[in-house]
Image (cartoon, rainbow, N blue to C red; front, top):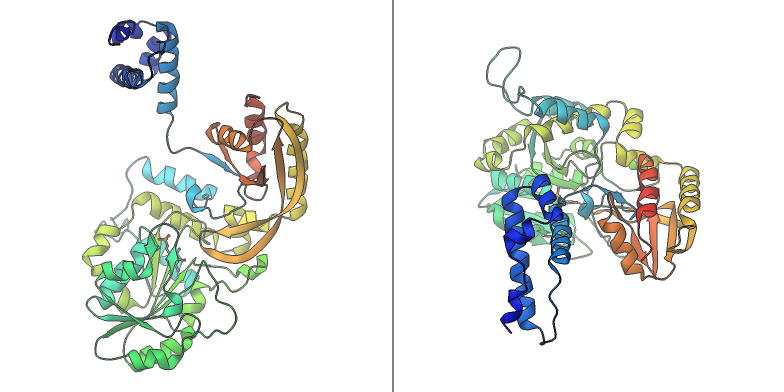
Length: 463
Ligand SMILES: *Cc1c(COP(=O)(O)O)cnc(C)c1O
């Protein structure tokens, strides 16, 4: 058995092959040598574990296989995707695509040095969130602002700074889990605040909160049940009522609104999404939300509210551990600036543009693409179908947005294989597999991506 290994070419022999020589030139000598070694190790192991009738590939074939494997390993894990899923804020696909002005701001601010913590007028040390603060106060009516990495961080920081070691009262109907690892009770525990649950899953009354308040109470917390809805026999306490109660007991009222709408989403037919400014107007002391959900900006957590509470939050050591970098601040400021005129935001912020896209446009684009790819030999059938997009990202889970999709059935290969080939293409194309068909929703495919989408199909092998 070990004799068979003698047929394996040596590492240096393999490196002489034209394929691997070229890899050395395009990648790096050490990376290729290590790659060849580990490929040969794997092969040896496979051979020793296999039954006796194994054939060792020829040196040339081996070199080709190693080069192919190295090439695929060199592809960045993080790469652009054409989103055909119809889920507008797809957390797995990076949530909100950024506006052009946000991208330009990132480029401008991060290519060189920037006035991150220098006050340009005085030359003194300044605050890194100054430009974002002014915009957010203007857009929401807040007095002050803190920006951290995401809303999970914003929640942990706020609870720690305002209610660490004390009890925070939350309705049992609002103890949410957001996709992945966000579970409110766990975030609360990490913050050092103690969860005090009140009410029931479907009904919580003002009196439930009132009875729970005592000398251990640090804050009242309201959480938007972003990704689920309780219907039927229900009762929740309004922000206003909670604020009145909090004021009476001199404790802060914290409102985690989640998606953080800055404009009224009913213009898109999407109802009941709380607006940040409304919560502040109702008297909430601190409002928490994400930057990359309905605002359509970079990933971050935004804390807005009354000066005295934000000051406490900014002084927490956790603030330093969670603060955002200049790229996030630049992108957030540029995105917020678009909201000064909601009409401009609707045209420039990609997620708002997607929501506002007239349905006839989607149909025309779907028709055109279907015509362009329908004749390809590996496509069995390609239809344009009425469909429904979703907001996603834990926002408005039960509300569907009408759309047009392309529904593709492969000629011979399995649907899994076709979906897989599209996923590894460049750019990657990800749709929904539904009843042996691949669905590509035109609402989440950016209009500028239509040609690239057709090219990906044209470039696919028919096997
Ligand atoms: C999405 C969401 C979070 C978590 O926000 P991230 O920015 O993803 O950390 C927290 N609370 C609510 C209500 C949410 O909807």
